[in-house]
Structures are given as structure tokens and as C-alpha cells.
Length: 137
Image (cartoon, rainbow, N blue to C red):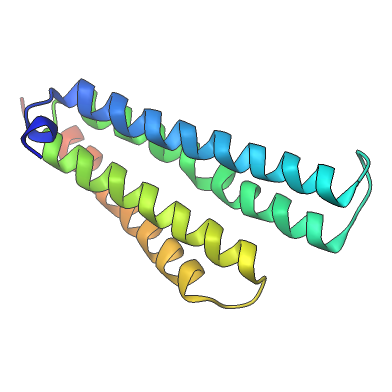
């Protein structure tokens, strides 16, 4: 684990943004696979396929803006450990949310953990950025 703390803030952000980008790719492949398996033509609706697209779209709502925030944390020189906590916490949260939602459109522990973890990432990123914005240099 020393290699994580030995990274620069930019390296820490790059690693976390890279992992989140791979998650987004994985969700895209998941939706494409569901489309093929269910033989749903473009523009058509199918309940199981609609759920698969919701899994991807839920991540699309949150992950890009938080990746920008992670990049901004690095630009401000936040400690790598902070960037890792936020980035890896977000990654785990989004995976839990995707698994929970893919399994059921109703309530699930995965969706709960994923939503709470994502909200914590928003607060941690926004809070750190706002503190830095109003801290004299």
C-alpha cells in the first residue's frame, strides 16, 4: 500500500480517474451485451434492457462530474491519501450501486451503499474544493 501514498496528487487522481473510466467502459459493455442477448433493436423498449440502461445512466449522472472534482483536487495539491479515499470510495460505491440495481429495480443493499457512498464523495470533493477556494495561499 506504500505505493499509493508515494504517488503525487496528479498520479493519484490519474489512477482513480482511470479506474472510474474502466468502470464506465464496463457498464457500456454490460448494456451492449444485454442488448445483444435480448435482441433489442435500437430505439425499441424492453423491460429488462431498460433496467440495464438505467444501470449505466445512473453512473453517467454522477461519475463524470466527480472525476472532474478528483482532477481539481489534484490540481490543488490535495494529499494522495485523500484523493484515494474519495476515488476508491466512489469506485466501490458505484460498483455496489450497479450490482444492486442490475439485480433488482427495487430497494437493495447495493443501491443503498452505492447512493450513500456517492453522496459522501460529492460532499468530500465539494467540501475540499470550497475550503481551498476560500483559504488564503
